[in-house]
Each structure stands twice: as C-alpha cells, then as structure tokens.
Image 1 (cartoon, rainbow, N blue to C red):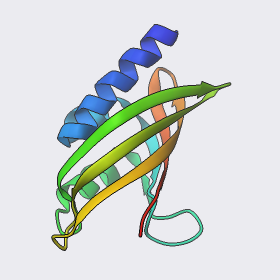
Image 2: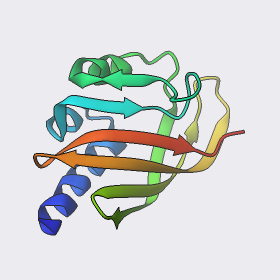
Image 3: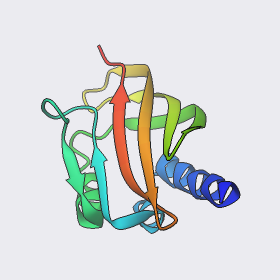
Image 4: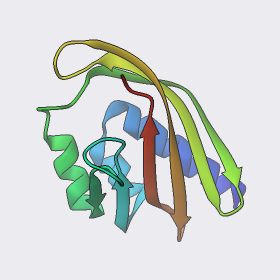
Length: 122
C-alpha cells in the first residue's frame, strides 16, 4: 500500500505543480474536500468536490503567476499524511512571494479525500 500512496502523491504533486486540473481531479475522490489556507476563519475557504476544484483553477483573478513548488516531502502519521513544501512565485498583485506550507491529507479508496492547507504568509 505504501508504494501505491507514494505513486498517488507523486502523480498529484506533478499535476498540482503544472495546475493540470484534469490530472488533479483523477487523484481525488468525488467527495474531495480542500480547506485552503485563506478565505475566512476558522477553516479557510472550503472547496467540496471536483467541480469546486475545477472552478478554483479556472478563476485566474487571484491565482499566483509562475508558482513553483519545491522541497516537497510526504510524512506519514498513522492514517494521516502530511505534506511539507516551499512555494515561490508572483502573486495576483504582481508581488513576489516565497513561503513554506504544510498540508494534512486523508486518503480513501486509493485517492485523496482531504487536503487541509496551511501556509506561512505575511
């Protein structure tokens, strides 16, 4: 099972880095939930399902430009997984950024069912 999870997260990470929404959607469950690190307390903005995921990537108004993810690592903690990463790029207002983040993941039936995101921001 560990190899299958490693393969899933490699595939998901590559798709996410390219903003390939079709490939991202192929890695997640139909009832996938993504709790973004911004967008309102206490949970941040919450996307539910593949259609919310597609709409998020289609809306370029707040999307960073030239976002590059690096230093990505997956850490297992019982039945949960944590992903640590660094992201650099230019935000939607034209300001460069460089920050670290962490995602809490849950996997169900061989796909990602939850991505709960946290990032260091100014």
